[in-house]
Image (cartoon, rainbow, N blue to C red; front, side):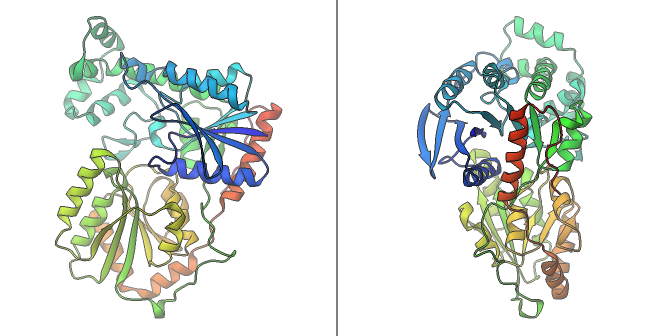
Length: 453
């Protein structure tokens, strides 16, 4: 079986969890005897080999003539380049790990034109949520049901429009946006007036995309439930969770440190992107509320773009007087588990609806507990009081209380560490995925193909 796996972008570019997952899945699929190549958007149309895997990059247009091209069926230039990739690679099946202007409905149709099965994995909330977080006005968890005016209002507020005004403008009929476009309106004012038109286009495109792929993989249960609420047939969505992306070593777990031998102070790690959605500011503020607590926080942050630099700068200035908080370089993925094994716990204060995240699997592979936000995929993976603590997501006082409790109760920390179970592996994920691919190739239709817990 020959496969093409398609993430948002790929190495050697800076990557996120989707790309780490795709690379790890690719390695395991190849170990199962499958032939796998990667196709991903990039800065230039090129071909190369990364870590023994052929990689094909295709390039969307750097500028669009109209905003509707970002919300509609996709970038025609990228789709044409993807067509050439299909001609070269001649796969049996294509697995999409992204939906974007480059990895688009046009791309799905290029694949289906060859009568090839298409599997799609929902990795991030931004696939269906115009805000990208599934948090209504950055506060409460959204049910994820697509609604034209509901989503338009929230998107407008995310773009900086005051909430009362976003309620008004987000209630306009799409015809107002079409009129603004016909009059040649450009700039922020035109975008605001066109929001309902653009969201209507986006929701039509999303509905068609999910209808035309052959099967959908949800990496957490909440994703599956959200897709079903939006009309995707239950039998078309399979829950197939992540797995740890690294071997722990010689088939065993890292040495376990018992409560009696734990060093002081408490050592916490944060690993992830530096932006507000990942919630590091909540964690830092919680520690600043505990100035005398013997605890160290090491931050292995991934900075992406100017927004990431600004966020890091703000936090570094806020924490500059606290020697317990250290900002360290991002870790290569292959070093994460070994690094985490040196800590007492991992903190995952994500504010948005995580679908994983992979770093929780890494912590459990390192045999350390997780202090995590009590929503989304984190709450599905961490069992409160058994292998970690779940904390009210944006409540700084609750985070401070959880850290204080963990630092002062070494028996609790030992009990949580004892409760950590070895996480499932990407080898197990690849085995389930092979079964899914085989059923898709056999034309078995919409049936749940795996349902890992």
